[in-house]
Length: 264
Image (cartoon, rainbow, N blue to C red; front, top):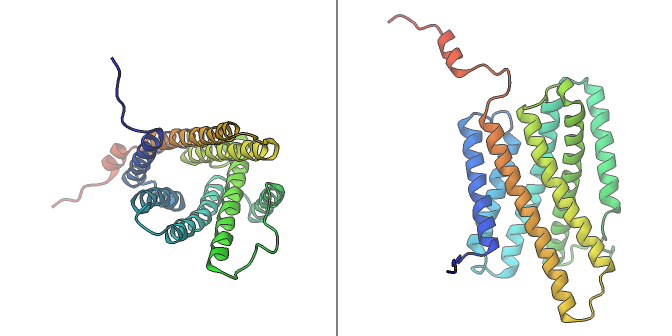
């Protein structure tokens, strides 16, 4: 007996990702977490919108127009990702003196920018031009990629700080801030690992036959699929931990009991 499963891995992961993002948005709204983490909510909503736009418009619009829309959304998403990291950092270390906070942020940014500057090939100066719509699109894509990498590196740095010293401030164990940053750091590490592995492969692989090329492409596909699974796991992690209240949070029943009832 053969079980017929008429869905591809890409279709299954797309469905799981989109459904998990919708559930997470409902949790953030229903459990009143959006007020504390508005940029995190915006980032998840924007990612879900990008998935939906890609699915609905692929094959229905000219390639250049579709790429323009997706790259523009990627630029916006990259900026939101940076704001998410800043938001989590402020939530975790908001009690730190302002001067210490500024110096710490500058140190983290300098380290992350240095890594971005030396990571991967950069286009030549001749390619960095505004001479044509296609050239502008390439610049926008480059900006999105580098800003995404910067946000990933900052997420890893903030995640390490929260895990190591977060308990001394406002990001102790089982806090929502720590739960969010652990998920962000896990997704960032997975994606950075994928990029690093792929960069190493492209530098050292010299396919001589079509079979060799197909094997390399298949390996790249498996790496991307593994990263998708990590992201789905992070979504589930956020759904679970953001559903529960933080330790020490007042119970709703107790709050309702303490509210005096006015006599009619």
